[in-house]
Length: 131
Image 1 (tube, rainbow, N blue to C red):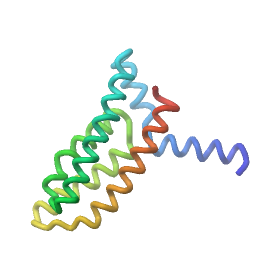
Image 2: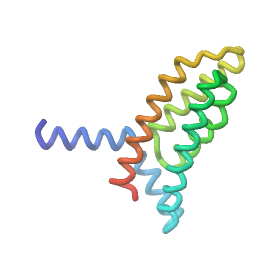
Image 3: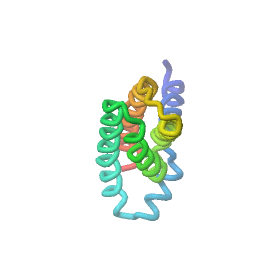
């Protein structure tokens, strides 16, 4: 891969993972507190992901709703768009399963894997571009 292609792949990754406009707005609004809020977001995200994992292990879609909703909202607010998109899909699935009284955790487990990859990418890109 030449330098130009590598640069395009890098830019694409950043734009796929983070909304830099939203991050700049958050930085402007939070000023010096942004880095602290970023630390809180990353810590809380780990907690919410663990709660989703627990809901899957318990075979209980209802236990997935709140942590994934909160994670989706905070991800969107912090500009973590890939996490927010995956979280929103999981939230919709959880609500649908609650309404239909089903608990099919196979799709949730697959989505959780994607969410964990997105979280890892988000942490890496935040370190490089937003801290």
